[in-house]
Length: 125
Image 1 (cartoon, rainbow, N blue to C red):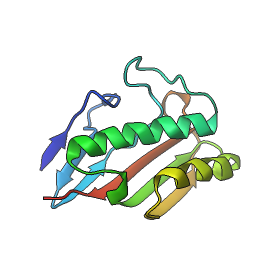
Image 2 (image 1 turned 60 degrees about the vertical axis):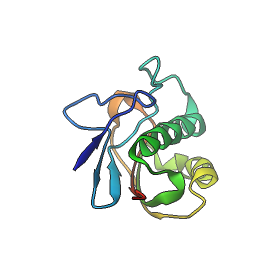
Image 3 (image 1 turned 90 degrees about the vertical axis):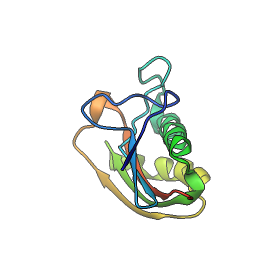
């Protein structure tokens, strides 16, 4: 198992890794819209927060030797399912390969985030 760490995405805020690579796949921890430089959520609104989340995921995937185009599964968490349509519009811009996906509403997300996404992606040998 290889632990993935990059300064181009927010560091873990608990006892976990940004991602791990096992058996040709990278499993990311959930990313919320924290700016990696400031360490704060600066993005407002679901669209802006979704873009920040995906940029964070792209940085983690790159550090793992993968990319958004190699994502096979996403799990998405929304603080409010009323944001689903707007979230989907931004999501579709980045995940053009249409990976498998689950999307659920949750009672609360860390730091008051509106969304969180975790992914599984292929790592090329």
